[in-house]
Length: 439
Image 1: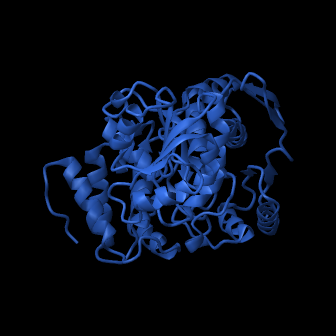
Image 2: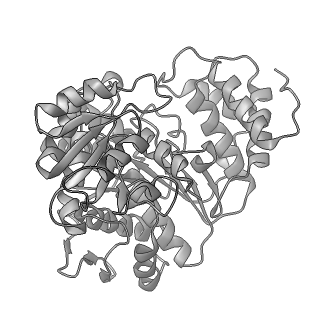
Image 3: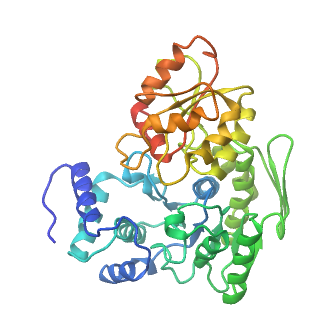
């Protein structure tokens, strides 16, 4: 396949992404053969990468990676990152030595991979993962933080022979239509990123998930350490974190990322990074945790088009499952006590009640919207009908802007803060509509 010519780098990249997305009838088709075949055609760039920390799990992957990146960069290291999904622009998935990939470089890479692949069926994630590996192999860096897309064992990122370390964040039921509903089976899939003699650090897990991780680690000979069991840590009264490491205790200040769950994520990030790169000084770990940025995750919106519609603070969070909703609900009182106005959107891939039931007790109102440009979005009226079974002030809104205007014009509770939540897709739409894109 010969890519068409265009002088606009952004248009070239977008057109290549659209063509590549059409090569396979399924958005997700787990397996490694197609990825390996494509990488071979590209000269196996995944064999020429800096040290890699490979991260799998259900919740917290992005936060742990963002924290490790900030810590490593505070130590003066050049860090690549591969993460998904993106919020506003595909470029967010590929960070080269600290900066998001430029449109021109992205377009060139995608066209090169497209030419190498031809018309061979390959999924969107597989081909873009191959492009990312190609980019990472050509730009010098000291570390690559690599996030799985879905699962672990059969995820396209799982083609590395020997990463420096692997990480398993908290495992919960999610994407059951691909991974099944059994927590032990899901954990077995996540455990597939482990490698013999490569240290793996795992967050505390449900019993069945923990048993699956321990079984797989024992079978292949992967050193496995569990946070809170093999590695002692505790949250401090001032919001900081104390961690017991072989080289001595490390005390971190309060993380920049909000919520008690981010203290656990910071501890996990610290242990994983120090196992992979023990030369990183404690000062850089402490500095990094206070400088971590992870847009769309319990994140206060900067001034923009949407925040100008009302006077109170507006926050966004991309949590979409029960585990994430519970973490969000636990974190909100630490930001502001009392009730919140919620603006929610959700996909039809899981029961909305799982999310709504966690936030309803904290709600001043629940304003339900459809997520723009998402065919799988629940209609606002459907989501509002579900929310109305849990809260009297639940209503459908035509848009996020419309919901904000309704909150601003309400007769009561107009001083309460606003939380926009329920989907990363909704978070991305909000950042774009507000004019505050991630960078």
